[in-house]
Amino acid sequence: MVGSIEKTKVDVGLSASASDEIAKHLNGYLANLQVLYVKLHNYHWNIEGEHFYTLHAVLEELYNSVAEEIDEVAERVLKIGHRPIGRVADALEASSITEADNTGIAGAAIAKNLVADYRILIDQLRSLIEVAGKHDDEGSADDAVGYLKDKEKQVWMLTAFGA
Image (cartoon, rainbow, N blue to C red):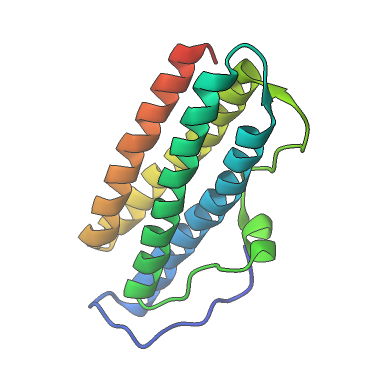
């Protein structure tokens, strides 16, 4: 992962090691969200084919939702006394989601690729929930459960589309 990230003076009662471990998971998730946000825009601009109108609108909803989540996750990192990943280069380095090519792409391929990306996020969130629970960080765990439910819904819907 990216080099050390500066801590803040915020203390919400987590031990230093707990906040370090949770912030590492949150920042990894944040990095993936940042790459996904750009990828969703790329797909929104480059979708082609019979499902253009349907997915064009869905992709806009998805990237708007991810933008809101990016802000919430970054703020959670700050709340537990750390700094969020904010540089694009750092997000790319830390992300396990890859960028999309800047080419035309069919809706079915987009859905398939996004299901894979959302599954990466689901795995990260389950790990984050476990780590937060281990350290009695109900705030991070609660946020992660909400994000998990959303990502599971997206996988369900994209799979129903034909992914």
